[in-house]
Image (cartoon, rainbow, N blue to C red; front, side):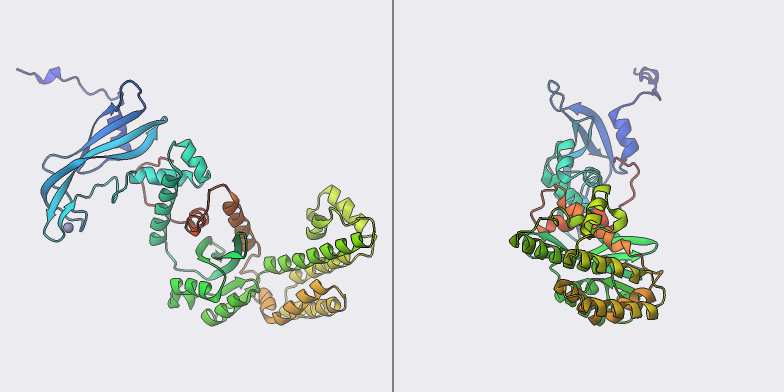
Length: 431
Ligand SMILES: [Zn+2]
Protein backbone atom coordinates (compact mmCIF):
# COMPACT_ATOMS: atom_id res chain seq x y z
CA UNK A 1 0.00 0.00 0.00
CA UNK A 2 1.30 3.42 -0.93
CA UNK A 3 1.35 5.77 1.99
CA UNK A 4 0.78 9.49 1.52
CA UNK A 5 3.92 10.18 3.51
CA UNK A 6 6.14 8.53 0.89
CA UNK A 7 5.57 11.54 -1.37
CA UNK A 8 8.26 14.04 -0.38
CA UNK A 9 6.71 17.19 1.11
CA UNK A 10 6.93 20.17 -1.19
CA UNK A 11 9.98 22.21 -0.38
CA UNK A 12 9.01 25.91 -0.45
CA UNK A 13 12.53 27.03 -1.31
CA UNK A 14 13.08 24.59 -4.17
CA UNK A 15 12.80 26.11 -7.65
CA UNK A 16 11.97 24.21 -10.77
CA UNK A 17 11.61 25.59 -14.26
CA UNK A 18 7.96 24.58 -14.09
CA UNK A 19 7.50 26.67 -10.94
CA UNK A 20 9.03 29.70 -12.61
CA UNK A 21 6.89 29.27 -15.71
CA UNK A 22 3.76 29.11 -13.56
CA UNK A 23 4.87 32.30 -11.91
CA UNK A 24 5.65 34.28 -15.04
CA UNK A 25 3.13 32.84 -17.46
CA UNK A 26 0.37 30.70 -16.07
CA UNK A 27 -2.33 29.31 -18.32
CA UNK A 28 -5.78 28.48 -17.04
CA UNK A 29 -6.47 25.47 -19.19
CA UNK A 30 -2.98 24.12 -19.82
CA UNK A 31 -0.30 22.74 -17.51
CA UNK A 32 3.47 22.68 -17.87
CA UNK A 33 5.24 19.34 -17.63
CA UNK A 34 8.82 18.79 -16.49
CA UNK A 35 11.49 20.61 -18.48
CA UNK A 36 13.90 18.40 -20.42
CA UNK A 37 17.08 18.77 -22.42
CA UNK A 38 16.45 18.18 -26.09
CA UNK A 39 19.93 16.69 -26.29
CA UNK A 40 21.37 15.79 -22.87
CA UNK A 41 24.88 15.82 -24.34
CA UNK A 42 24.94 19.28 -25.89
CA UNK A 43 22.53 20.89 -23.40
CA UNK A 44 21.69 23.79 -25.70
CA UNK A 45 17.90 23.52 -25.86
CA UNK A 46 15.22 22.97 -23.26
CA UNK A 47 11.80 21.61 -24.10
CA UNK A 48 8.77 22.01 -21.88
CA UNK A 49 5.76 19.98 -22.83
CA UNK A 50 2.40 21.59 -22.32
CA UNK A 51 -0.74 19.56 -21.84
CA UNK A 52 -4.38 20.52 -21.57
CA UNK A 53 -5.90 20.13 -18.12
CA UNK A 54 -7.88 16.96 -17.68
CA UNK A 55 -11.46 17.34 -18.95
CA UNK A 56 -10.58 20.69 -20.47
CA UNK A 57 -12.38 21.24 -23.74
CA UNK A 58 -10.45 22.94 -26.49
CA UNK A 59 -11.31 26.39 -27.80
CA UNK A 60 -12.09 26.96 -31.46
CA UNK A 61 -9.56 29.32 -33.06
CA UNK A 62 -12.26 30.58 -35.41
CA UNK A 63 -14.79 31.94 -32.93
CA UNK A 64 -13.08 31.60 -29.55
CA UNK A 65 -15.79 29.36 -28.12
CA UNK A 66 -15.37 25.92 -26.57
CA UNK A 67 -16.14 23.04 -28.90
CA UNK A 68 -16.08 19.26 -28.97
CA UNK A 69 -12.80 17.54 -29.79
CA UNK A 70 -12.27 16.20 -33.28
CA UNK A 71 -8.74 14.77 -33.48
CA UNK A 72 -5.10 15.56 -32.69
CA UNK A 73 -2.38 16.97 -34.88
CA UNK A 74 1.35 16.31 -34.78
CA UNK A 75 3.44 17.95 -32.05
CA UNK A 76 4.34 21.59 -32.55
CA UNK A 77 7.25 23.54 -31.09
CA UNK A 78 7.01 27.18 -30.01
CA UNK A 79 10.02 29.25 -29.10
CA UNK A 80 9.88 30.98 -25.73
CA UNK A 81 12.17 33.56 -24.10
CA UNK A 82 15.66 32.01 -23.83
CA UNK A 83 17.06 31.29 -20.42
CA UNK A 84 20.73 32.20 -19.88
CA UNK A 85 21.42 31.83 -23.60
CA UNK A 86 19.74 28.43 -23.61
CA UNK A 87 16.87 28.16 -26.09
CA UNK A 88 13.51 27.27 -24.53
CA UNK A 89 10.69 25.63 -26.46
CA UNK A 90 7.13 24.78 -25.57
CA UNK A 91 5.95 21.54 -27.13
CA UNK A 92 2.29 20.81 -27.54
CA UNK A 93 0.16 18.28 -29.34
CA UNK A 94 -2.52 20.51 -30.79
CA UNK A 95 -6.09 19.34 -30.91
CA UNK A 96 -8.67 20.06 -33.56
CA UNK A 97 -12.25 20.80 -32.68
CA UNK A 98 -15.51 20.25 -34.47
CA UNK A 99 -17.11 23.64 -34.09
CA UNK A 100 -20.81 24.00 -34.92
CA UNK A 101 -20.10 27.50 -36.29
CA UNK A 102 -16.69 27.18 -37.95
CA UNK A 103 -16.40 23.50 -38.85
CA UNK A 104 -13.22 21.57 -38.06
CA UNK A 105 -10.57 24.01 -36.83
CA UNK A 106 -7.32 23.93 -34.87
CA UNK A 107 -7.66 24.82 -31.21
CA UNK A 108 -6.74 28.24 -29.91
CA UNK A 109 -3.79 28.29 -27.53
CA UNK A 110 -3.04 31.11 -25.12
CA UNK A 111 0.74 31.42 -25.65
CA UNK A 112 0.77 31.93 -29.38
CA UNK A 113 -1.45 33.02 -32.22
CA UNK A 114 -1.87 31.76 -35.72
CA UNK A 115 0.85 29.79 -37.40
CA UNK A 116 3.58 31.55 -35.49
CA UNK A 117 6.62 29.66 -34.31
CA UNK A 118 7.48 32.24 -31.70
CA UNK A 119 5.37 32.55 -28.57
CA UNK A 120 3.63 35.90 -28.12
CA UNK A 121 5.72 36.64 -25.02
CA UNK A 122 8.94 36.02 -26.93
CA UNK A 123 7.78 38.35 -29.70
CA UNK A 124 7.09 41.15 -27.20
CA UNK A 125 10.44 40.40 -25.61
CA UNK A 126 12.28 40.89 -28.92
CA UNK A 127 10.23 43.98 -29.74
CA UNK A 128 11.03 45.43 -26.32
CA UNK A 129 14.76 45.04 -26.90
CA UNK A 130 14.39 46.50 -30.39
CA UNK A 131 13.67 49.85 -28.75
CA UNK A 132 17.10 49.81 -27.14
CA UNK A 133 19.22 48.11 -29.80
CA UNK A 134 19.23 47.98 -33.56
CA UNK A 135 17.32 45.04 -35.02
CA UNK A 136 20.57 43.45 -36.03
CA UNK A 137 21.84 43.93 -32.48
CA UNK A 138 18.79 42.19 -31.06
CA UNK A 139 19.07 39.25 -33.43
CA UNK A 140 22.71 38.80 -32.46
CA UNK A 141 22.13 39.18 -28.72
CA UNK A 142 19.40 36.54 -28.64
CA UNK A 143 20.67 34.32 -31.40
CA UNK A 144 17.69 34.69 -33.68
CA UNK A 145 17.12 35.96 -37.21
CA UNK A 146 16.68 39.56 -38.35
CA UNK A 147 13.36 38.50 -39.84
CA UNK A 148 12.15 37.24 -36.45
CA UNK A 149 13.01 40.57 -34.87
CA UNK A 150 11.37 42.51 -37.70
CA UNK A 151 8.18 40.43 -37.52
CA UNK A 152 8.08 40.80 -33.74
CA UNK A 153 8.35 44.57 -33.97
CA UNK A 154 5.72 44.60 -36.71
CA UNK A 155 3.41 42.62 -34.47
CA UNK A 156 3.96 45.04 -31.57
CA UNK A 157 3.28 47.98 -33.87
CA UNK A 158 0.05 46.61 -35.31
CA UNK A 159 -1.17 45.75 -31.81
CA UNK A 160 -0.28 49.22 -30.61
CA UNK A 161 -1.92 50.98 -33.56
CA UNK A 162 -5.09 48.96 -33.08
CA UNK A 163 -5.26 49.77 -29.37
CA UNK A 164 -4.11 53.40 -29.23
CA UNK A 165 -6.45 56.28 -28.59
CA UNK A 166 -6.67 59.21 -30.99
CA UNK A 167 -8.93 61.30 -28.76
CA UNK A 168 -8.00 64.71 -27.42
CA UNK A 169 -5.52 65.67 -30.13
CA UNK A 170 -5.41 69.48 -30.42
CA UNK A 171 -2.04 70.27 -31.97
CA UNK A 172 -0.29 68.49 -34.78
CA UNK A 173 2.88 69.13 -36.73
CA UNK A 174 3.69 67.81 -40.18
CA UNK A 175 7.21 67.26 -41.41
CA UNK A 176 8.98 65.70 -44.35
CA UNK A 177 12.12 63.63 -44.20
CA UNK A 178 14.22 62.28 -47.00
CA UNK A 179 14.75 58.55 -46.51
CA UNK A 180 16.48 57.29 -49.62
CA UNK A 181 18.78 58.71 -52.20
CA UNK A 182 17.00 60.56 -54.93
CA UNK A 183 13.90 62.48 -54.05
CA UNK A 184 12.23 59.95 -51.81
CA UNK A 185 10.39 61.51 -48.92
CA UNK A 186 8.28 60.48 -46.00
CA UNK A 187 5.48 62.60 -44.59
CA UNK A 188 5.33 62.41 -40.81
CA UNK A 189 2.58 63.76 -38.61
CA UNK A 190 3.14 64.31 -34.90
CA UNK A 191 0.91 65.13 -32.01
CA UNK A 192 2.62 68.10 -30.35
CA UNK A 193 0.27 68.87 -27.44
CA UNK A 194 1.85 70.01 -24.20
CA UNK A 195 1.05 66.81 -22.34
CA UNK A 196 1.43 64.38 -25.20
CA UNK A 197 3.97 64.18 -27.96
CA UNK A 198 4.16 61.26 -30.34
CA UNK A 199 4.39 60.20 -33.94
CA UNK A 200 0.84 59.77 -35.21
CA UNK A 201 1.21 58.82 -38.81
CA UNK A 202 3.67 58.08 -41.62
CA UNK A 203 3.06 58.19 -45.35
CA UNK A 204 5.15 57.63 -48.42
CA UNK A 205 5.99 60.76 -50.51
CA UNK A 206 4.98 64.31 -49.68
CA UNK A 207 2.12 64.94 -52.05
CA UNK A 208 -1.35 66.25 -51.29
CA UNK A 209 -2.62 62.73 -51.71
CA UNK A 210 -0.23 61.47 -49.03
CA UNK A 211 -1.21 64.06 -46.47
CA UNK A 212 -4.92 63.69 -47.23
CA UNK A 213 -4.63 60.07 -46.17
CA UNK A 214 -3.65 61.20 -42.67
CA UNK A 215 -6.81 63.27 -42.33
CA UNK A 216 -8.89 60.38 -43.60
CA UNK A 217 -7.31 58.16 -40.92
CA UNK A 218 -8.01 60.75 -38.22
CA UNK A 219 -11.64 61.09 -39.24
CA UNK A 220 -13.78 64.15 -39.81
CA UNK A 221 -14.87 64.65 -36.22
CA UNK A 222 -11.37 64.60 -34.76
CA UNK A 223 -10.10 66.87 -37.57
CA UNK A 224 -12.72 69.39 -36.48
CA UNK A 225 -11.20 69.47 -33.00
CA UNK A 226 -7.71 70.44 -34.11
CA UNK A 227 -6.67 73.84 -32.77
CA UNK A 228 -3.13 74.21 -34.11
CA UNK A 229 -1.41 72.79 -37.15
CA UNK A 230 2.28 73.36 -37.60
CA UNK A 231 4.03 72.90 -40.94
CA UNK A 232 6.77 74.06 -43.24
CA UNK A 233 6.04 76.02 -46.42
CA UNK A 234 5.66 73.01 -48.69
CA UNK A 235 2.72 73.87 -50.91
CA UNK A 236 0.87 70.53 -50.96
CA UNK A 237 0.81 70.56 -47.14
CA UNK A 238 -0.44 74.15 -47.01
CA UNK A 239 -3.27 73.28 -49.38
CA UNK A 240 -4.35 70.18 -47.49
CA UNK A 241 -4.31 72.01 -44.14
CA UNK A 242 -6.45 74.83 -45.55
CA UNK A 243 -8.89 72.26 -46.81
CA UNK A 244 -9.04 69.80 -43.94
CA UNK A 245 -8.34 71.84 -40.81
CA UNK A 246 -9.63 75.26 -41.77
CA UNK A 247 -10.73 76.03 -38.21
CA UNK A 248 -7.24 75.46 -36.77
CA UNK A 249 -4.57 78.13 -36.49
CA UNK A 250 -2.01 77.20 -39.08
CA UNK A 251 1.49 78.02 -37.92
CA UNK A 252 4.66 77.98 -39.93
CA UNK A 253 7.24 76.24 -37.89
CA UNK A 254 10.25 78.23 -36.69
CA UNK A 255 12.55 75.29 -37.22
CA UNK A 256 11.65 74.97 -40.89
CA UNK A 257 11.99 78.67 -41.60
CA UNK A 258 15.44 78.85 -40.06
CA UNK A 259 16.34 75.69 -41.97
CA UNK A 260 15.36 77.45 -45.21
CA UNK A 261 17.48 80.43 -44.30
CA UNK A 262 20.46 78.21 -43.57
CA UNK A 263 20.10 76.59 -46.96
CA UNK A 264 20.22 80.05 -48.54
CA UNK A 265 23.37 80.98 -46.58
CA UNK A 266 24.96 77.76 -47.68
CA UNK A 267 24.13 78.51 -51.29
CA UNK A 268 25.64 81.98 -51.06
CA UNK A 269 28.76 80.58 -49.41
CA UNK A 270 29.26 77.80 -51.96
CA UNK A 271 28.85 80.21 -54.87
CA UNK A 272 31.20 82.72 -53.36
CA UNK A 273 33.85 80.14 -52.52
CA UNK A 274 33.78 78.93 -56.12
CA UNK A 275 34.06 82.47 -57.41
CA UNK A 276 37.00 83.30 -55.12
CA UNK A 277 38.85 80.21 -56.18
CA UNK A 278 38.29 81.01 -59.86
CA UNK A 279 39.55 84.57 -59.28
CA UNK A 280 42.67 83.30 -57.52
CA UNK A 281 41.91 84.65 -54.02
CA UNK A 282 43.00 83.01 -50.79
CA UNK A 283 40.43 80.40 -49.72
CA UNK A 284 39.23 82.25 -46.60
CA UNK A 285 35.87 80.50 -46.79
CA UNK A 286 37.40 77.07 -46.39
CA UNK A 287 36.01 75.28 -43.29
CA UNK A 288 33.58 78.12 -42.74
CA UNK A 289 30.37 76.24 -43.34
CA UNK A 290 29.40 75.55 -39.73
CA UNK A 291 30.54 78.82 -38.27
CA UNK A 292 28.21 80.56 -40.70
CA UNK A 293 25.27 78.20 -40.15
CA UNK A 294 25.31 77.64 -36.41
CA UNK A 295 23.90 80.12 -33.95
CA UNK A 296 26.67 82.12 -32.33
CA UNK A 297 26.08 80.74 -28.87
CA UNK A 298 26.55 77.21 -30.22
CA UNK A 299 29.91 77.77 -31.88
CA UNK A 300 33.00 76.01 -30.64
CA UNK A 301 36.01 78.11 -29.66
CA UNK A 302 37.73 77.39 -32.95
CA UNK A 303 34.61 78.31 -34.93
CA UNK A 304 34.26 81.57 -32.99
CA UNK A 305 37.81 82.54 -33.97
CA UNK A 306 37.11 81.62 -37.57
CA UNK A 307 33.92 83.68 -37.59
CA UNK A 308 35.56 86.80 -36.18
CA UNK A 309 38.25 86.41 -38.83
CA UNK A 310 35.58 86.16 -41.54
CA UNK A 311 33.75 89.22 -40.22
CA UNK A 312 36.73 91.35 -41.21
CA UNK A 313 36.01 90.72 -44.87
CA UNK A 314 33.07 92.18 -46.65
CA UNK A 315 31.98 88.80 -47.90
CA UNK A 316 28.58 87.96 -49.34
CA UNK A 317 28.48 84.86 -47.13
CA UNK A 318 29.06 86.98 -44.05
CA UNK A 319 26.32 89.39 -45.06
CA UNK A 320 23.90 86.50 -45.51
CA UNK A 321 24.91 85.20 -42.10
CA UNK A 322 24.31 88.59 -40.50
CA UNK A 323 20.89 88.82 -42.11
CA UNK A 324 19.96 85.51 -40.57
CA UNK A 325 21.26 86.60 -37.15
CA UNK A 326 19.24 89.78 -37.53
CA UNK A 327 16.12 87.76 -38.27
CA UNK A 328 16.40 85.82 -35.00
CA UNK A 329 14.90 88.86 -33.26
CA UNK A 330 11.67 88.17 -35.06
CA UNK A 331 10.92 85.26 -32.76
CA UNK A 332 11.33 87.38 -29.65
CA UNK A 333 8.27 89.52 -30.39
CA UNK A 334 5.08 89.06 -28.46
CA UNK A 335 2.53 90.93 -30.51
CA UNK A 336 1.77 89.90 -34.09
CA UNK A 337 1.55 93.58 -35.04
CA UNK A 338 5.12 94.45 -34.06
CA UNK A 339 6.43 91.18 -35.39
CA UNK A 340 4.75 91.97 -38.71
CA UNK A 341 6.42 95.37 -38.83
CA UNK A 342 9.80 93.83 -38.17
CA UNK A 343 9.19 91.18 -40.82
CA UNK A 344 8.35 93.79 -43.45
CA UNK A 345 11.47 95.81 -42.67
CA UNK A 346 13.67 92.75 -42.73
CA UNK A 347 12.27 91.71 -46.09
CA UNK A 348 12.81 95.20 -47.56
CA UNK A 349 16.43 95.24 -46.35
CA UNK A 350 17.04 91.77 -47.70
CA UNK A 351 15.51 92.56 -51.08
CA UNK A 352 18.11 95.31 -51.45
CA UNK A 353 20.96 92.99 -50.52
CA UNK A 354 21.69 91.54 -53.96
CA UNK A 355 22.06 88.12 -52.39
CA UNK A 356 19.76 86.13 -54.64
CA UNK A 357 19.21 83.08 -52.35
CA UNK A 358 18.37 85.36 -49.40
CA UNK A 359 16.05 87.44 -51.57
CA UNK A 360 14.26 84.26 -52.47
CA UNK A 361 13.71 83.53 -48.78
CA UNK A 362 12.41 87.07 -48.24
CA UNK A 363 9.93 86.66 -51.07
CA UNK A 364 8.68 83.37 -49.62
CA UNK A 365 8.29 84.91 -46.18
CA UNK A 366 6.31 87.81 -47.65
CA UNK A 367 4.04 85.39 -49.44
CA UNK A 368 3.34 83.56 -46.20
CA UNK A 369 3.14 86.62 -43.96
CA UNK A 370 -0.15 85.71 -42.29
CA UNK A 371 0.83 82.12 -41.54
CA UNK A 372 4.12 83.36 -40.14
CA UNK A 373 2.38 85.78 -37.82
CA UNK A 374 0.17 82.94 -36.60
CA UNK A 375 3.24 81.87 -34.66
CA UNK A 376 2.56 84.82 -32.34
CA UNK A 377 -1.17 84.19 -32.26
CA UNK A 378 -0.43 80.65 -31.07
CA UNK A 379 2.39 81.64 -28.75
CA UNK A 380 2.52 79.65 -25.61
CA UNK A 381 0.50 76.81 -27.09
CA UNK A 382 3.28 75.46 -29.28
CA UNK A 383 6.88 74.87 -28.48
CA UNK A 384 9.14 75.27 -31.46
CA UNK A 385 11.51 72.52 -30.50
CA UNK A 386 9.08 69.61 -30.72
CA UNK A 387 9.02 69.11 -34.49
CA UNK A 388 12.76 69.71 -34.66
CA UNK A 389 13.33 67.13 -31.93
CA UNK A 390 11.24 64.56 -33.76
CA UNK A 391 12.99 65.39 -37.01
CA UNK A 392 16.34 64.57 -35.39
CA UNK A 393 15.04 61.34 -33.89
CA UNK A 394 13.64 60.24 -37.24
CA UNK A 395 16.99 60.82 -38.90
CA UNK A 396 18.70 58.88 -36.14
CA UNK A 397 16.30 55.97 -36.49
CA UNK A 398 16.60 55.82 -40.26
CA UNK A 399 20.38 56.03 -40.08
CA UNK A 400 20.86 53.34 -37.45
CA UNK A 401 21.85 50.05 -39.00
CA UNK A 402 18.49 48.37 -38.99
CA UNK A 403 19.12 46.91 -42.41
CA UNK A 404 16.25 48.91 -43.88
CA UNK A 405 15.60 48.25 -47.49
CA UNK A 406 11.87 48.61 -47.66
CA UNK A 407 9.31 51.22 -46.79
CA UNK A 408 7.55 48.63 -44.65
CA UNK A 409 10.59 48.24 -42.41
CA UNK A 410 11.19 51.95 -41.98
CA UNK A 411 7.53 52.62 -41.23
CA UNK A 412 7.55 49.86 -38.62
CA UNK A 413 10.72 51.14 -36.97
CA UNK A 414 9.47 54.73 -36.77
CA UNK A 415 6.12 53.81 -35.24
CA UNK A 416 7.89 51.51 -32.81
CA UNK A 417 10.39 54.13 -31.65
CA UNK A 418 8.37 57.33 -31.80
CA UNK A 419 4.72 56.29 -31.73
CA UNK A 420 4.43 55.89 -27.93
CA UNK A 421 2.23 52.91 -28.70
CA UNK A 422 0.47 51.01 -25.91
CA UNK A 423 1.38 47.44 -24.98
CA UNK A 424 -0.77 44.74 -23.42
CA UNK A 425 -0.49 44.14 -19.69
CA UNK A 426 1.77 41.30 -18.73
CA UNK A 427 1.87 39.42 -15.44
CA UNK A 428 5.64 39.46 -15.75
CA UNK A 429 7.91 41.79 -17.69
CA UNK A 430 10.64 39.87 -19.44
CA UNK A 431 12.53 42.86 -20.78
ZN1 LIG B 1 -15.71 28.27 -34.02
